[in-house]
Image 1 (cartoon, protein in one colour):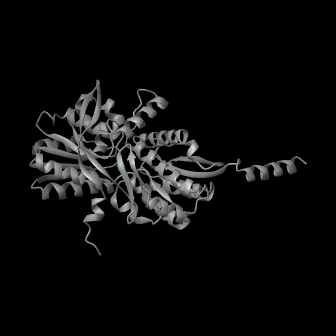
Image 2: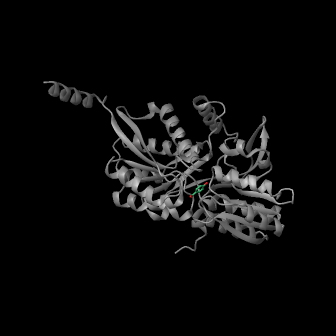
Image 3: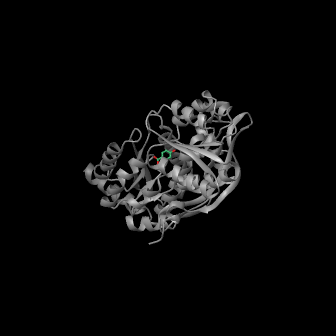
Length: 393
Ligand code: PHB
């Protein structure tokens, strides 16, 4: 009897649209280790978006996040977690991939399962070529480091580069070097350090001895960025006249308070700064602080996850909560937002990569706090330069 009543009730609720149709998003991100900020900031942004946009969903539709910790650059673990989310949890979408090796490991699963995979960070250019079901809302290292090289060539003659020895580091090195040399600069040397637990001191000493005008560094954002900054200061490179520059990963907003004064004057090129004056960013930061406290500030991982949710919500609305992979990919490929916290953004339908502005920033003190102050827009509606500069087949 009870069973029959609940079945009837269920049917009635379905008919009125009151019963929830749940869209499950399986998130494989980094929630522990030195890069734990990716998962923490990503989740905060997604949850904030869901809270503020609950009324934007079709009636009866709800969104559920199922989150899993890959612990850092750990492709086998990321693959296993994605597999479980697909097979056991039957997610409708995958999201995440803070680290390139992890995103590369998940890509073939997305293809096999025909499941859209929204890359929230991994910045090596090649990532999006690994599955037609992959779309990237974050950035590429070529997007930041190529304009950085162009800017640096106008300001410095001799550069040194120091990067993490894996995909995004190689891309940052290649992009910066190509642009810097094309602008007339000379690269005195290029160092690559291990991705996990590097000791920067011997490398910084070599750079100091070579006396370049600037040192371009890429390391994954998070605690490693602070370690770079501290070693740079401890070994007296700034005092020796070396100017520290890099993609914005090296001055990630949430680590600035931990870096301290040594970060002052560092120039970076990046697509997102919490200090940006755009009204959409001011609204984003205000909503963030209201939710998570005045001392918490969003970072680029938060901006990526926020935009990812806006894109996913657009698909959910258009498909009335019943996601079909091909339709969803088509919506993603043509998605744009003229008013994201980071400025106008769009997905390039050819490459499924983000198209966005890049800003030159300098770390300055604003109201007593360190901030990435945007000085100028150095590239507008920039597609991934690596893909653009490839000889066309
Ligand atoms: C990456 O693995 O692609 C990656 C990780 C951290 C960053 C940027 C890129 O800050």
